[in-house]
Image (cartoon, rainbow, N blue to C red; front, side, top):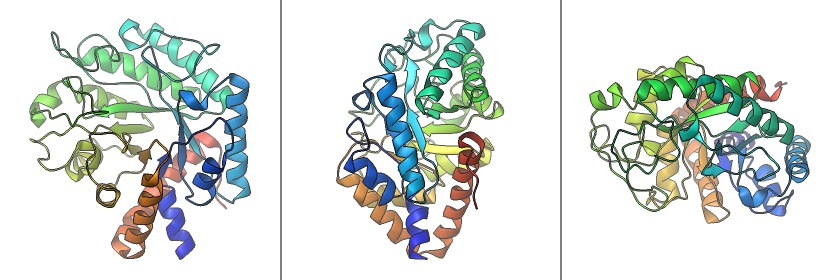
Amino acid sequence: MDSYIHHLAGQRLMLGFEGTGLTPDLREIIEKYQAGGIILFRNNIQSPDQLAQLCEDAQSFARSCGRPPLFIAVDQEGGKVSRLPEPFTQFGGNPGIRSRTEAENFARITARELQKAGINMNLAPVMDVVPPKTDSIMQDRSFAGDARTVADLGTAVIKTLQENKVMAVAKHFPGIGRTVLDSHHHLPVLDADLSTLAASDLVPFKAAVQADVSGIMLTHVVYPKLDDQWQASLSVAIARDLVRDALGFQGLVLTDDLDMKAIGHDMKTCMAQVLASDIDLALICHKGPNIENAFQVLVGLLASDTALQAKADVCLERIYRYKQRYLGWHTA
């Protein structure tokens, strides 16, 4: 049972690391913490050949440890947020995409390059709607236009990425286009009610669900009229009641990076909320004590509560389903 609990805990984590190869840190993430996935940043990437070797070595090491294959994720939105440097194809980003043909072209080329490198999940597209005349933090990362336009262009990206065997993740639920503060450094608050969000911000995410998007990423923004205590990324009312129950989403639900300044809670609090909210993958994107703390807290919580274990089994089945569908993995 102890080994299963460790596996149950580790598969819920998507972790970042330092280095450009199979470093001791990366080995520990895979072997000791049994991480469900890893996330890559610019400092992990030097060249196409190096990146492909890194991904191949990580997957080979996971197999040698008897682990399932890893989700290997990257933020490759194009434009401002592009982790893959030249000679990977460089795109101008969502604001410059004005047609489904352009969206599909971006997604097709990006998917081909990610696949060749061994990356199987793109933390994109951004599905946030920026209202007119708003000094939004997302204005240089979002599609230009109203909610229907964002939905149309975003689903073109989603479908094309996934047709080319790369999981798409729509972000940042339930929509941060109205936000003027950056959650990397602050805790933004949006005082919009559900009817206001449903009329605009949620429209692209509903379309993403209908397009069978693999994942939805939750923002750290607080929506007090939806949950006056927790950020969306730790909220039962938003992650479970709204995403799962109201939208009927059966794919992967991810937090944004729990290392961000908007998260003022300790890891014990964060992991308890992740489990309570039926969130599949908690992102901790930087080396440090938070990784060890999160893993140990998850193990402790799951070992002491059979009801949480049962809920975690459902999340694990979901994680396995996407590893089978996109990574060609088959359980024994």
